[in-house]
Amino acid sequence: MENEEGLLKRLAEGEKEIFGELVLRHQDFIFNVVSKYVRIEEEARDLTQDVFLKAYENIEKFRGESKISSWLYRIAYNLSMNWSERRAGRETQLDDELAETLAEPPNLAEEIFEREAQLARITGLLAELPEKYRTVISLYYFEDKSYQEIAEALGLPINTVKIHLLRAKERLREKLGAEE
Image (cartoon, rainbow, N blue to C red; front, side, top):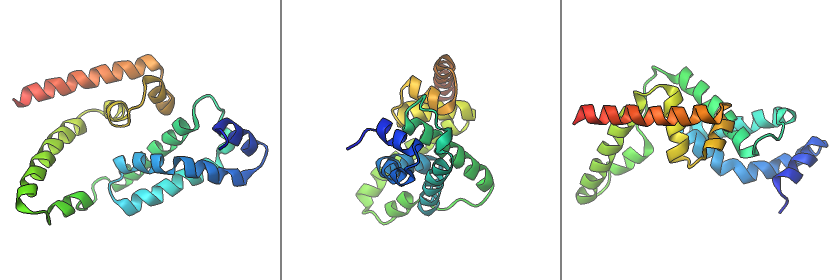
């Protein structure tokens, strides 16, 4: 299996059919990224395709200063945010996972309800944070990205990423303390 550097070199030399290899390597990762922001599966799949289409159309702009996954992440994040802004204020649909829990047996339903309540509380607190903090928290804790990967994906200096993460955690602690 060829490394990404080799694939990118061949792409730069005009072998556009090689792009399919990059799609296969990163499609699950990008779908997971998009799904964090776009909860409607069909929309998330469409947006994932849009990410790769945009990447294909702009492959010559990839300078190789970061990993291709960071570059794709940035595209996915931007497209997801644009989608979210367009959808703001519209009726939200019942999440597939929640719909599945409605059919669970009673003993499991209670456990799932408790987990959902905890998740809703945390999600609610995260939603109150400014976007720049929410994004850094999500990447660091839910995507297991390093400071460097976050900095590359968001186009920020690494120290800014560290400060955003620190401030986000401080605000969450304050909010959790205020609720108790």
